[in-house]
Length: 541
Image (cartoon, rainbow, N blue to C red; front, side, top):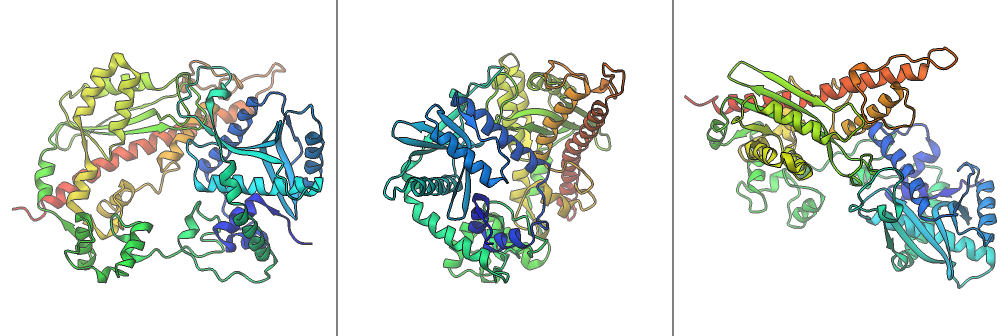
């Protein structure tokens, strides 16, 4: 029996026929999403559920997704019932292709199809998914009704999160939380492409041998393939991509100009930026290039000096009153202080309550930085500057003090970009790639949380665990003291709750992971600055 095609399988084939082949023949070998990936999958599911309240009276096809026969049968029952204004998770099958629609809305002129996406702006892949859904549903309806030339899906569109929606507490106001984008005409234009892709995917499903596809950029577009390093080799990046500022589009441009390898560049090639020329020199010398101006730049960073790093949460669904979808909310900072050479202090803050973290964090930051009110505050990128700016807008009573902090910021990133290049940078300048090249003894490999996205997800999970540990269930308390997490609680029957115990342990584990990660970021900046100073003065008399 020929395997059934689904939306996810067609999308996999669109990325790479080899991915679909492995999903069919080696389904257990694909890598699982990490904590951040799982969070955003679950968050997307929740966004879809919230969107249903825009359609009062709608009925959910409450049948497991794998029970195709029953879910399709139940969908047709609801479609045929004129008293049902909308159907959620409507299931359709046409010619061996199975899809589930987020929302089918009954209209006077037919049906409206809405796909819910937990994003602020639609991308090409979202439009293609909508076109795929519409094509299959329209053909399934036409086949059932015996109508060949009519399209029962009169309207198709995307429901996206609205950046301007401000959460006021309680239930979400879905009329304002979502922005409706009609895309009926665009999906109609994509129908031929969708039908072609369905046939090509079907051909791949019938193949008995592995498709002869070599790894390339498609392995990461639009998402990293779960079979990389498992059943597929990791693609070897083109050597030109190791040059600063060279991405896929720039690579194509260079190749059109006859540049196919690093050896094709001239020393002062006009196709290269200043960073590119410095990198070319370092690559050809097999080492490191340091500009004379580095000494002068570093001399401006005097003692006492501070090193600041923020962590912030950005979730599709706003969780605090007065916040918006995907709004950046800082919840943690680490501040290393060097009062004088050889002396180091550390100040830090991690928000561990269920209320809005911005005010207490800002107050703790102002207090910590007041120890040396004239000291420069070093960061790595403009991120900290933007966070402080956002805090000043949110806290007008603290705006003047926060603007004062912003004036003290010194960004190490442009100093690195404009004065040093090491072949270990591999074309990048993020602290995650610069640090191993300049300070090889310090990295992030020993940390459970090793990037900002994971830190954001862990923070939200920590709050969830704190609620459970406090015995508050789904309620959101206004304040929970993390250092007083109740490791045990007693049920009315007088027994110890394993769930509460586990939540307490999990909250503590996450808290420790967050502390270690944020601290490592400022430790990295301290070590990086010291390494730069050492390099700058290495050949100085």
